[in-house]
Length: 323
Image (cartoon, helix red, strand yellow):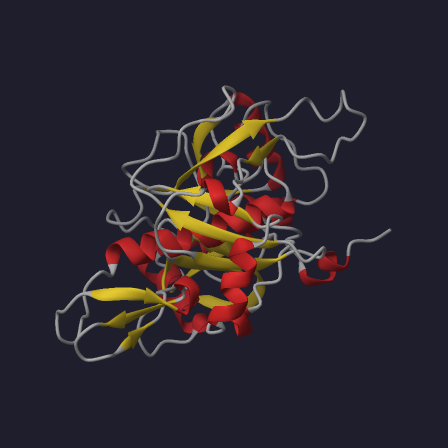
């Protein structure tokens, strides 16, 4: 049976950190009796996060289990009686009505299972189920925002968590502050020959290449940001922009908005020397050969950058094992 969530994926398919199987139920965030009842329910599960990390358990090889789509790792979730003290972030409910919370901690709880390990979202985002990927992405984003917004930017007094972790309220002036999300555009830039432009930052590994990206500036449309970033970083003029999909990127608080951008002046390409150290055009055959030889290491599987490259490359995309 087709998964109804597939209808929301768009041209880039199911992005690792855009997956979810939990209804956030924002309408309950101000309903204190309902939240208290949910917390006390023995079926409720709690995720503890500390500086972007959580405890996970590695699963058996899904192929050996006869289910190649099974997750390779799962979150360690506690019942509320075993959860540590701290702010409670309501994450939502699944299709069976089970509620989920996150609790931020200075450290992760004692490992009740000897096989549990600490892991970051970057490490395990691709390995988790839809439910767990969504829970951890949501929790990591909230945890970072709470840690970095302890004081009111208006009057400087302490703020405290409210609305089940989705608001911080100033103790002095009463101003409410909401989680920060920074929009960033990321582009698969192509030329009239349908070659793909990849760039390398100076602080990356020598063979690491990716598509171009940059933050949206105040008062700027997404399309204008695409054109500006391509001009600034590669000296090229964008003539067409096509939106392809988005993925939250809570490292710490970005929303990556993916585009295909066409340029008409590929011969003018040049690296700006600031954001990018090098830029190169690739045909599909050239990129496949460069990846196979190790000359080019593409973006990791968890990133929307990888999906943009694969979307351009087509169904025959392949990479060396472990990339």
